[in-house]
Image (tube, rainbow, N blue to C red; front, side, top):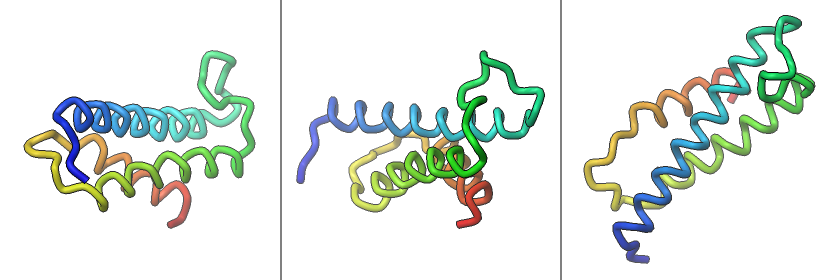
Length: 91
């Protein structure tokens, strides 16, 4: 499948959004009982947080493994989120 530059940019943005979700959920979890209503996922159980992170990291890994047309887009944030997610979920 050949993707347009616009499709690649949209997919990269979606990956960055997924990385952000992973980072926010892990940060909220790290706050423990200090998490407030302002923290995304504050009302989730640990298992629910793990599932949310697993879904997001699954998408990131799929994108990276199945497409090689990323050109010179920066994946540092995405790669770190994948590593952090794997640590958080025990993958």
